Image (cartoon, rainbow, N blue to C red; front, side):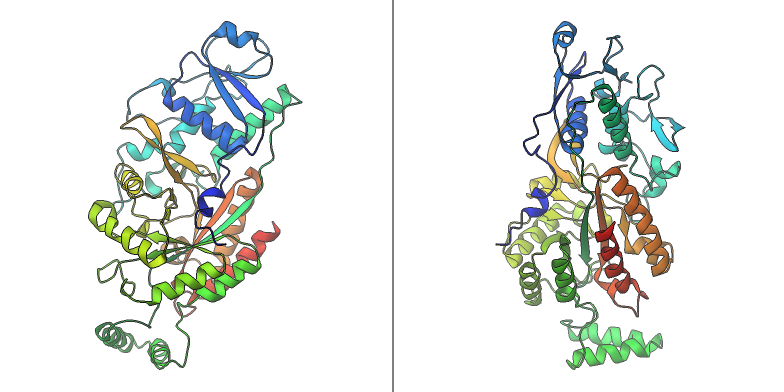
Length: 454
C-alpha cells in the first residue's frame, strides 16, 4: 500500500535500537545545546546522548564521555565552548574561518582535541543563524549564495558539517575503541518540481493563441509544429514525463518525489488551472509507481498566508492525501515567516533548503535537520531536507551544458558519499524537453544510474 508519510519516515530520525550512549559534561543545558547534540548524535551518528551539569557525577560515570567545558578532566575528549550555545539572543557577529586538512572551520580553540568548537560551528550553520542575521536578498527576496558564509570562502560544495562530525566520530573511536557507531549509508532521492503540468495540453484558448503567436514571432517553427501536433493528439506533450520517469525510478529503486505548483495565471505561476481533472490523473499514475507527491507553494505564498492555506487545502483534496511535504516555488523562503506558516498548515517536511543559482550545501550538511526558532529559542517540528544539485543552477544561471552539469553533480555525489549523507537532486518537468534544455532529460537518467553504482 502506498504510504505518503514515507518521505518523512525514511530519514533516520530514530535510533533503530542502537543502545550506545554518550555523556556530555556541560555547565549549562540550553535549548541550543540540546538542538545541536540531537542533530550530531541522534540524527547523524545514530546514538543516544545525555547532558550532566555536575562535574563529580560526570567523573564517576564509566562510559563514553565528552567534556564540553573549560574545565580540565583527564582522559576525556574535550571540546572548548565558544559561548554561542549559552546565548539567548541573536547578534550580527559572523564567525571567522580558519583552515586545516583542506577544510574550513569556525570557532577555533587551541586546547581541545578537535581544535574548534564543533557544536557552536554546527549550530551556526544548521540553525540557519546567518539567515536570521542581516543580509542582502536577491531580486526574489531570497537568501542566495552571495550571502552565504560558505560560498564567500568557497566551501559551499563540501558538506563541511558532515565532515566535522566524521572527525568527532574518528576521535571517539580512537579514544574508545569499543564504541559502537553505526556506519551511515549513502542515500539518493530524486525530486522534480512541476511548475507547469503540461507545455501545450489543457490550456485555455487564449493561452494557446498567445503562445502560438510568440512561437511565430520568435521564428520557433519547431515548437509551433510540436504544439500543433500535441493539440491534435498526434504527439505526446513534452512535459508529460510522469509515467516514464516514475517507471524509471520504480525499476531502479530510487525514491522519487514530485512537487506540484497548484496556482496559475500570475507572472511566476504558470501551470494549468488547478481545477483541471488532469492533476488527479497524474497523481494517481505517480502513486501507482510508488512515487510521492508534494505541494510547490506558489511564488507569493510566503507573504500571503491565506493564499498558501488555500493551496494546501486544494492540493490535499485533489491528491486525496493530507499533505506533509512541500518545496517553495522559486525557492522563495523567508526563515522568519515561511517555517511558521508551514507548521501552522500541517507541513512536516520542507525541501527548499538549497540555492537557486549554484549547487552546493546551503546549511553545510547533506543530512536533514529541524527548524530552530530564534524567537522562541527552541527546535520546532519542521524537518528541512537540503538538496545540493539543481538543473536550473547549471542550465539557467550558469549556462552550463548537460555534460558539464553531469561532471559537477558526480563530484558532489562523491562528497556526499564520503560523508555518508543524502544526495538529493532537483529537476524540473521542462528540463526533459530537449528543445528547451539540450540533453538535460538524458542527463537525468544517466546521472541517477551512475549514482546507483557509486
